[in-house]
Length: 304
Image 1 (cartoon, rainbow, N blue to C red):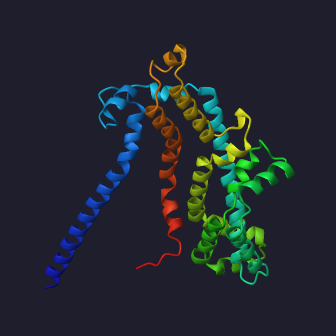
Image 2: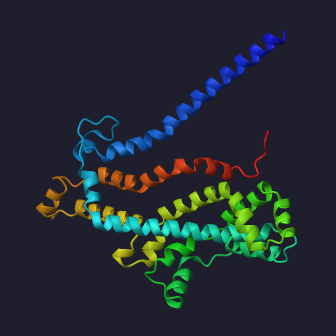
Image 3: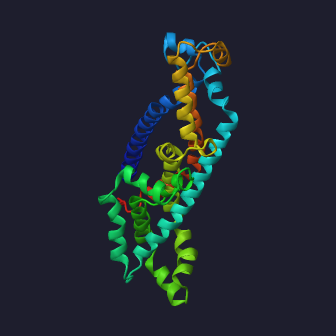
């Protein structure tokens, strides 16, 4: 009887796992298909797209769309450098500040905990808006055309601090910090040598979200950046798209400009090429942080 029951449970779980696997595969294909189509469309001939639409198996391939983006070679590499610097510097600085803030809030008996909590919630309740921020940053702080304005606005957010504080409270035993204090370690040593190394999953999750926000940010650059040498990748790609739209809407396009683009001004293929330039680095980096990203986001979840 017991043997038959065991066999029944094994068959039932085997069937359930099979159904779940099929569902996950279908969902993966469903969500991956648009991304695959973007990559294919970037290398599809523009005339073919205009005549037949987007296709997973186009009959005519072309590099015109990608070349229209890559011909900005030097400026493209420069914008990549600016974006990478802003992303790395902003993420590192933000993680350091927010992890220290979260650590301070998690300390029992700390007299400023209530003040820090209220201070953290103020930006969620009251916001001066972009106009007041623009006036303050440019007229009083004189930071116009400075890379600091690409880093500081996204450096610290309330939600990320809450995630880090929750991780410290739920996943790091408070007894470890108390033991360090008894052994004579100060707050800085306890934080950097004990708490911070144990926060890797939460830091990876928050860091990935911050890096994605920095990587995709273009509004701050549009407001504050003037010099071409300081334009990030997103703003450059927007300018490229505007240039292509101008050529498409201008009847007096020089023949030399059309010849440089392969005789046809690419619109859809160039748009897809800009998407590839943006998302490719994120797709390459994400698998290395996926484990920590998922673990950090499931902090505080109820285990069944």
